[in-house]
Length: 323
Length: 280
Image (cartoon, rainbow over all chains, first blue to last red; front, side, top):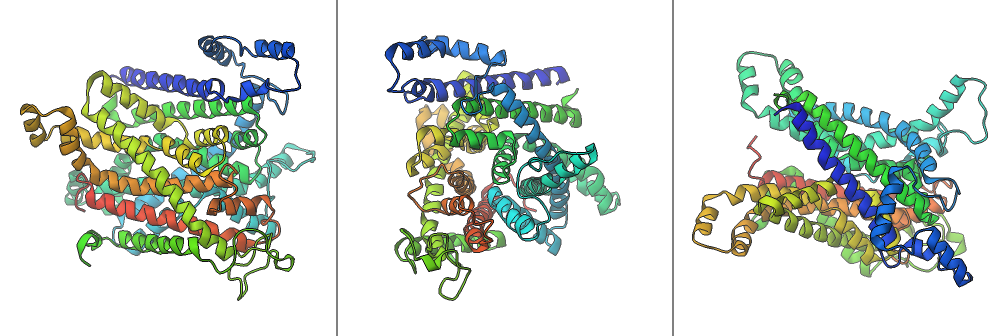
């Protein structure tokens, strides 16, 4: 399979998914009977001429297929509407929050992949020992914990009781910084707790995946061959097992990106961290539907892009794909 | 042990999970009808936010109601919503997966792409949006969680169907002129059911987690008591800053234990029932 063909086979479904997401967005927010945009102009105090004018301005008097096309045109030119609450363009609001989310999510994901892979590998390798059981137990517990609850526990213990870290937000409100270093240290202090929570929860998932992957690989014949050749167990694990177990891990990480999103939404809400996850929660509570729609689109696009990147990584690591 | 529990003989994980689940089932059954104290209305002013004591093992919440009673009462709803939502997910997933695996060509490909799309779309934002748009009551919550989480099951059903479809007895049935419906129902379905059962257990676990999350975010039914709504109240009414750990810890531990129970049983069943897993 030529690499180019493989990539083409991945990009097209990604675009289809994007199309489906945007259609879903449109259907949910603009096409359902009680949809929030028609409710916008249903203010009984408004005179009918005003209502007609508003309907025209929002494009609500156009036939549905035309609204659908307009929606796509707007989305691709970066016009996602105006926030009803903040009164600024949705695109600006969402992109600002998206950056904050990336600051939180990226280190957490990297850490959890590294640690989770190590734990999973250990657990799959030393079958039937105390290490396997404790690693398995730890992974199971981490996987089953509700993220928001873990966040609450962390706040209660580390922030309120021990006062080691701030309880919420991304920076201390109202503080100005004499130099870049103090800005960084304030940012870091606010990031420690949310990042730890997110890392712990994602850990469980990756450890369990890595474990099944490792167990699978260890039962293969080529591992037996390596053992027969006299290689030490640790060398076998480090070279053969790791490389081969890594492949399904990459695929599964790509498939489970939704988990990172779910974790981020909960973590940001509990820690009042101003990211795109909390934006979803906020806009639900304040009924700021343009923002909700825009945030969902942003999140979905990020996941689709991340999925494509993992596909690329997979192609890089699996030599069978390239030739 | 004899009978259907025989399958768990060699599997400690499954046994542990089963014990946990049976324990919580009993808790849900009992707690729904009889709790030490009342769980609705308000308690007395002197009893607000009391730490654990002999009369209130889990303390009281911010309106003076006993936390232990609430945990017992909320068990039923949390489990029930998870069960129903999980059932919906598995049913839809089994249907889509079976059909996409059995039928090749255009129909099959469309269904597969459809499944892939829903695998990628992040679940929680979609659930949140739909719950927000549809309104906050139990049935909406069940519906919304159910129709978002089916893609994983569909994948499993599909891959198993692809295998069964090529087995000799199916080919023989087809050559004898059996209709598609007959083959799917009488031959493919029984082969896929064991895997679906193992998967269903895992799906129910994640559905319970989803319900807790939705209720925590305030999108659940505020008139009903579940572990998630308890945590919502704890969070929004400042239990964290009042240091009321007794209000925060029990519901969360219960959620985690129940999900762990379902996960253990699900993994154990998968190990036992999955024909592709080699004997290690």
